[in-house]
Length: 340
Image 1: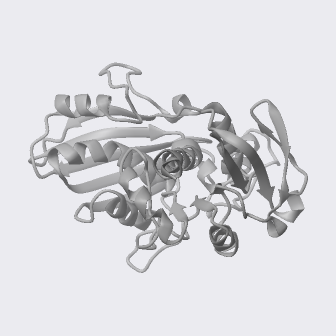
Image 2: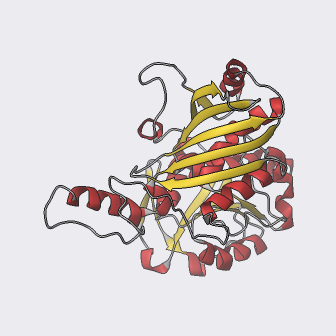
């Protein structure tokens, strides 16, 4: 049995990646359509060995379609997602619009697959923030063993998280550093991103944190456990694709680093590369195009009673966005549609 699939925002970075992953994972599809705004109407996009031409989102009828993967901004999602949902087409939304709605499940399939049962309330499922998705994959199996009290995380987030214009800005600024007279002023970011790091992602909130940092706190609580305390510092770095995180975890019970390593090796969606030697860890360049969340640098934190440090790396366009959305679709097909 195959499904009728809609990819909304198919010309963007995440939309294209959704199509790639659907093909790579051989998602059972009877029919697929790529939707975009009217200005991108007719754009040709690869899907496996075939080519799709985008159709107009504004006039599309979602009736009779099973699943719509949304990769457009919150404003457009607010307009079109309820239309799809009203037509009984499940919306899996990559924007932040529905993540904090108590009637909308926020799902990472390796972490809280049971939340899929709440889809029927609005026919919408939310995809978490890219930085949250990879972190909770690592946290959940450790939480099941020793219960997490507090997480301190610093992120090193690639420019692809800000879209194509940000990728272009990094590329052009980098070239401009070597060619006199071709310097490129910041437009996507408030400061130069090439050869620099910017401790500022999304807008600032009243307490001095940024919204990206707040998202990590709120989403971790919703996905895993409301009792977990999280504090985050989110930083944009001059990397094209791949988010990295330095994560400090405090547990209620003692957890030995060797046991933590064994637990993570057995956990779904995780690849442990942790050798205490030169190059015995994973960096963003190495994770691009991969499905896994990579964990390295697992070690005891001797400054607290029950602490572990680790390094977490993942392709943010995949696990942080497109892959997780497709995994939710797989979960929905497996757990809901097949039950009739």
